Length: 510
Image (tube, rainbow, N blue to C red):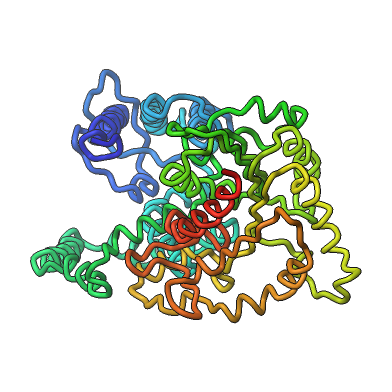
């Protein structure tokens, strides 16, 4: 079982229980005695002698006195905080848990003797924090879940963290001074009745299969769709984990490619690799360049080549996230674009595939296309590539969602969790063409004899005439991880399109 499950935590409860028994013994109370916290803090009876050899004394505990010296308990408290809160992995998690529990048990024992209590844990702010800590514990997770639901997000921003902390502590303070104090002062019978009623409702809910009915209601939206699986899938892809690794394991280190561009490497080998198909019978070499869009696209180009084009000998990926032609988004972009012509010239690929999601400059209003600066910059970018490649395939921009602040995968996940319709999660071809009209005006002016412009929007919007859906209506999977990057389902939309464009080029190369 997991370490945090109850069977695996018995030793922690035993450690706490042992500390309590030692504490009772040191204070001269019988084993099993129950002393209310408020009573310990407020009783004003005469002091008693320290218990020696755990002799039983039924006297009461002396009220705490003001502590002014830094003591062992303070040092122990600081050590526990340092170990548990450290951003670095000081120790393996299992060892850290054991040490933290043992140190906390020792701290409890020290707290039982007034002359060993520390300054830190007897200070008024920390005592009050301790008073409300259990309610904080109870309130924090529901608060986080509700915040994520309202904000349509799967992770907390800095703003979200501060808001959740504020709400949690507000709830804890109010509950502590009302509900919690009421039950502390009330008789055990009152608390037992309330707990019994709550457990009764829970039992009735289980007997009536309420969880199953709720799940059935969710499934009724689409009988052929596993809603729970769709929720989990959309939540997972929303994290954009592609940034952490190469597109697939067969795409391996490429020292030859690095040498071709003068040794330059940008953000590491995650975005640069080479793949040689096992079933290759030819000598065609393909170079794929671009930003993070190209890093994802090679994942669908791989099965396209494996299933259709054995004449391809190798595919080399040289990409750089956030770097678009004619724009400097990050400081790694100029070196990347400077090294790109070297890569193409040294490799002399049969096909170079260029893939970008968007560029602001290329979509700015066109004043005079004949003298347009953005067009000239793009031509300058393309020229060394087309001059050193037999063919160049330039992916046109594809339609993508614009009205989901948290990303399409998260938005769809939240819709499914709330049992809300998702029929509005789509765009129109007309809106896309209007939005990128300036880009297409410039693109029409760019003509090289070996440049093929690949229409990706036709493939992305082929499911329904005039519309571009942002998710797969068959399995409720988002086509986008955020508002730009394609998921596996989104890439699948482009499979036939890449097959056709590569096929038409390879016919000329045979």
